[in-house]
Length: 72
Image 1: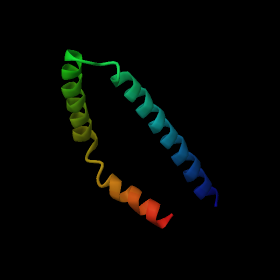
Image 2: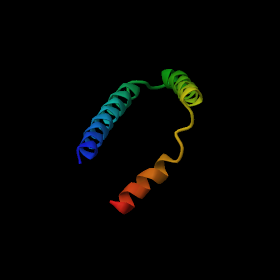
Image 3: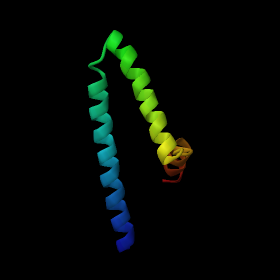
Image 4: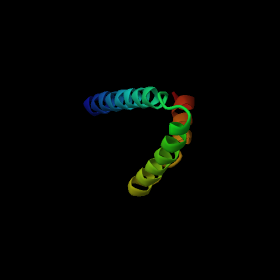
């Protein structure tokens, strides 16, 4: 039971960090318009590709989330 509680707390902590990072990034990227957007978007895509190449493919995340939702 204690291990379950620790895993649950840790999962919620990292989910909260991810959500906050996503919100900050979304707010930051909304400031780009026009020509600057044409520069930022390819650079962002290249950065994402580099991260995936270094850390590896995240796999079927959507499948995992759907399984969690359907099984409760």
